[in-house]
Image (tube, rainbow, N blue to C red; front, side, top):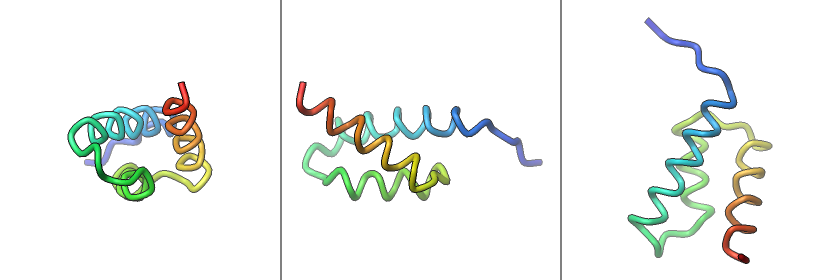
Length: 61
């Protein structure tokens, strides 16, 4: 049986996934990781863009 998960939970899980993957594969491009997360967590383009902005702003700090 399939469980329906709130969209916000999927975005949180995608964020955690991206953080972990960046630690394990530091040389892999952010765009590639975002594509993988988008497919894995069924993210909308808006969600993926928000995650990208978040990670890019994190890199600047």
